[in-house]
Length: 381
Image (tube, rainbow, N blue to C red):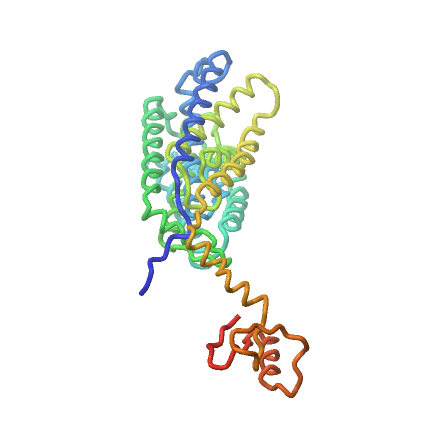
């Protein structure tokens, strides 16, 4: 009779909920601290400036978290945003729709290329993303053309930020379903060292990650560029901040696991902390995403340990064996012994005992057995 095979992993969302409450309190405290600083939502730029800075970071963080969920980290978030922003500014003379289409179309093509390399050729995500990211930085070294569109209005920024928050919450909610997580389990490295990804799920996640990164570059350039100067995003700074915010939000570096609002709260905490340190001038604000990455590694270990499977008593007993097995291993019953007696071997067998010679010879090859009393079944050890 076949028994139902249990999933090797389990998921407890309580650890994510507790951590996200702590993140919410931390974000609220940082926003309160910014009330007495010269930067942030309570400065001259107001909430519109905060939203314009948070929107591209949240898009990049969502792309990073999505790539982590499918166990293929996208380290090219920043370079993709830079290249897409460059294309958007350069094509702005052709109209808004065409400029956005070229920028996001390039991000889609790059995502499709990366998906083919990751899902079908089994190339690690960090290798393909670094290769693609380095190539995009070289292609974007020249200055783009003059920006011909009006700057992005505040109302559109607020609307886009709200839509992005809803999108990240909805995507995280979908990822919390057991069926989705069971499919994502195939993307994690198995105990035998093999990687058996789900091709379509992995490819879709990678393409969506590239599109979100491209959207981050478009939004950043659109909200900061004007007819005199074109504003392009710093690629490695965005990648560093997005990775730190995603890990700080509770997304596991091993894939599959993540919370609900951790992506949004992590982005708020990273941005607010950097602005607060910039205003105080204590040290380089880029140490904040670096610290978030290090702390995210620790948080990943906590999430993985908290979700480790607990063995039942039957499973432990089955794996450990029975006490009679230990007794049988401690003594060897030799042929010719009396029934019911356990006779310990006193000397090595000789060529006069071909059965015993064959047993020891077979044991050298890892296939031998010890013969039991005549009439009894032979047990393999």
